[in-house]
Length: 80
View 1 (cartoon, rainbow, N blue to C red):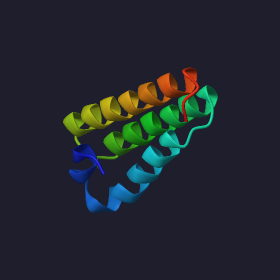
View 2 (cartoon, rainbow, N blue to C red):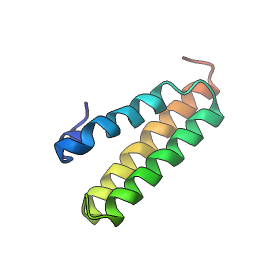
View 3 (cartoon, rainbow, N blue to C red):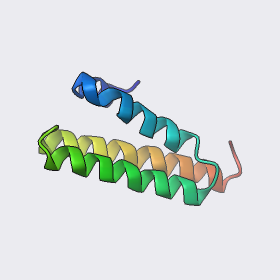
């Protein structure tokens, strides 16, 4: 688990980890983009309901974006 997820409230960690696992398991670029959009919606929802503050939302969103970017690069290169 990453440092950013470690700093989330414990109740949010399982869903955060599931989203991360879904991104890593994406089998196509479409799946990766779709899972990235789900991650962004998750972060926005947490921030809007007060589950995390704006700084945490920015950091978490940036984290998921980087993970999606890396997954897309691997898929484009034909790596698993």
